[in-house]
Image 1 (cartoon, rainbow, N blue to C red):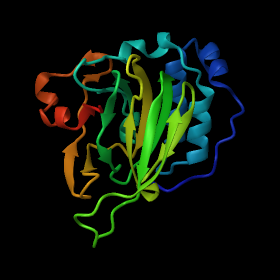
Image 2: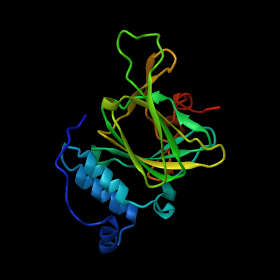
Image 3: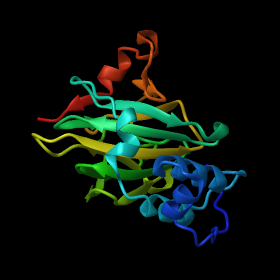
Length: 222
């Protein structure tokens, strides 16, 4: 995991940056994040403030919000010159992730539309194989709110609790990662899953880039 750094204090809002450079707000947000990640340090407070300062506007992100009626989707927006992945996730009603870790990466989530429920679990101890995971809490993330997760805080599952409405969320992972561990809630058993993208920069990925395992790692809860 990247170490934390000293907070940046620009005092300039995303709206001011976007207006001055005639950028869409999403481009201004990407520019600010690239500045935050310009070296090998991550400041959690700085990232949270930057994401909170962005007010969700579908005109900014709709080109990246590509849905699949069968599963939630990961849509790559920016790679930050290899320092992070910025991804728009699209959730149909009732869709959820498996319980998973973040392979040593920081995870920031900004809610763009709808609501997500987050359920957290403690990392299983080495001598607890076969025993259920211990739930440590649950919370909801509403539009324009930001939440943070890392392996130091445990495992989590994210889900769209609505039975009728879609949800869209913006996720930033640093360092960028291409795999994670999935955990069985009943037995604590884990296995590795590749992180794949439904689309890249607003265009659907090739079918070969979306393996069948993606269907196994995204589902609907009854």
